[in-house]
Image (cartoon, rainbow, N blue to C red; front, side, top):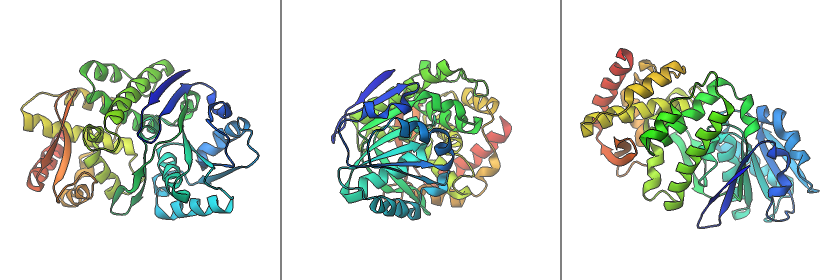
Length: 358
């Protein structure tokens, strides 16, 4: 078992990584709670809910399940969970537990942030992708105009990461999670990137996954402790997300996984960076690795460039109607740059052609 402490302006919290710890949750509670509400989804609940319940000794424990998938991260599900919390009699001394992937974590976290002006919550990620969303205190739901446009910064009281839960993930979800690990490696250093790209996602060894996850979490932890509310360096964690979020929104949430969309967005950022900074970046190495691991790198996903640019302008990082992107001067040296609409049109066309040709 390993512990990583995250410093936050509201309160510090600990990320605990281990095996079998989902059924020992009472050991990680910092205080007694009047009641507990577990929020999970239909798939995760079938696998792990009973284990979590067995590790709690509170008399007033409730649980509810949402539909699995990005479509549940909406205002209707958010309101439904608020209603369930009220009907269960939760009060300001209650605890919400988010048991699941990034959708459950973002949604349940936002419910916790707003229920009675804020109650404690614990993140229990069950996907690789959720290593990113469960750390740093970002909680949100989607709007039809864009992803995560309604939300807040609200840190959990703990992150309990049971590595055993990752063994049940389908390859598609493994791909999704590793896209974020590649992103974190790109903004860290070349050695970290080389190590991550050694992963064979179709035959992933648990010890390899653990090492890559720890590296990704340490990168994110270092950044969010410097810049909790994304005023500066935390923006670098959005590498690949400007186009990635636009692709998710344009093609319909759930059609592309978040990580698959970010993978395409990351390549796009490298494509622009190479031209803008006249430098060689590991575009081909990452493209080849993504191709071998079956990422959907299809040029047709980029066919409607005008709509994609409009979607990109709905991104939270847009300022005065100007699209800001995270680019790389070199591996480990991210920068923020404004990219004009005209330049984006040109880059999207040349990137589409490059996807076909490589």
